[in-house]
Image (cartoon, rainbow, N blue to C red; front, side):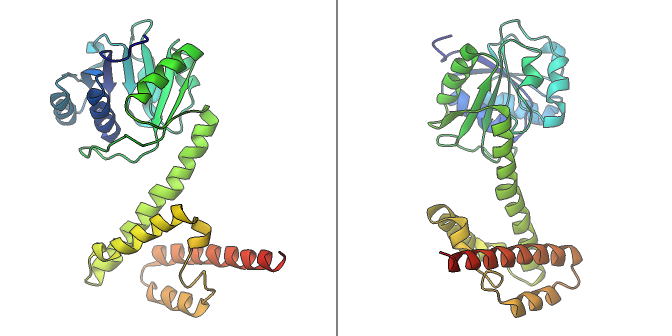
Length: 269
């Protein structure tokens, strides 16, 4: 399989990952021939966009070179076991936390192609420069999956399952938790008659500075200044929102502790 272009792919699942990955592969000359999803609305919509067929049952799965299990982590292995794939087909999942051996124990050409990106159904994300982490059961399979990934990004990295899980955890902390805090900020702004978009320049500069300088050197705010009077005022303002008040306290205490440790270490230099 030295020439990857023109090879065929079936996507099992029609969520956000399947949308962006199928669009990227299609643009790279890979034939997305079928979308298999019990969700008729989502499956048919993606199939139509790809010019592919749609099936709701695993029994009707088409013959292809690659099969992507674009599914929730908890069902990847069980779904894989329930499908009769062609003997030499590549069976690939795109999870950050599921070990390769969940598939390699079942299929000789098992692999992982994990884009480190956030996906939402109906929102197509460009993968041009997104890190894509690959893993496979054999060196030959790894070479082919690496070639496949290289058609959609310039940033392909081969790692093992444990390394991928560590990266996934970092992604959850940095991305999912940040988004949740933005949701809480949005609720607070709306409750007080303001728009979330007022925070956009602040957040854009925060992210830019964190990557250009470093998160540890970019931390600002009352906790980083050890201004406990402002912290206490904010905690009182959140008295009617105990869960948010608790989060504010936990984050502030952590920032204060880290700031004090950093200041102490600086005095020892």
